[in-house]
Length: 270
Image 1 (cartoon, rainbow, N blue to C red):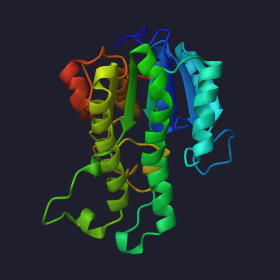
Image 2 (cartoon, helix red, strand yellow; image 1 turned 90 degrees about the horizontal axis):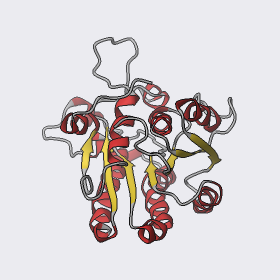
Image 3 (cartoon, helix red, strand yellow; image 1 turned 90 degrees about the vertical axis):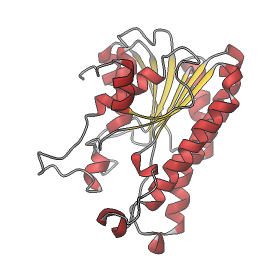
Image 4 (spheres, rainbow, N blue to C red; image 1 turned 120 degrees about the horizontal axis):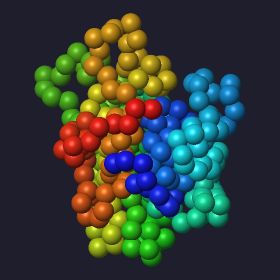
């Protein structure tokens, strides 16, 4: 997909202050979209990780798109409602929703704090469902829309006997949330099939080096042989899912490099 694939489109990208979300927002800008950049971090130094919605918005504009940064805590229903209302009032009807926001803790099930569980499920699953609910009426009225939920290979069931990493535990609740998100995606795709709205779930084939994956030790910067993929790969795959004519791509639980290989596409280097 070259630049211009999203000309005239309005897209909300959550979790867009850094990492995969920021890369998707910038790629959408290069494709001509107006991007509503949503995340909690508005000012540098207010989060342990680098990146703000303002910085991502500037990157979107440099790429050729328009940007509307909106501070939103996706764990709060009122923030989700305000996000959609602000997007519609200031940018216009929303054509695309990318639910990428995540709060993640890696702890074994036996030791998992249920308050943290509630927060993870709220941000990763319930927020995606709620935002879709808020946007479906407008999309249905216009006969088109694209929803992409960012998932992870952690949604796949561990094999038995389990490898050492699975035995050590810590990723079960994260994987459960992503599995729920994938089932939401395919079920919603079926429900909306007669409305012209595409719904998909997308994961990276390999770990993406981001502030979050580095913090959790999922990426080892001292290991040059580690198999990783750049965030631009996920950005290009998300663009493909959010610009394909209906019903070319809907109801997919797919992976970034797998999808790009299928479509014969190469990521735009950022």
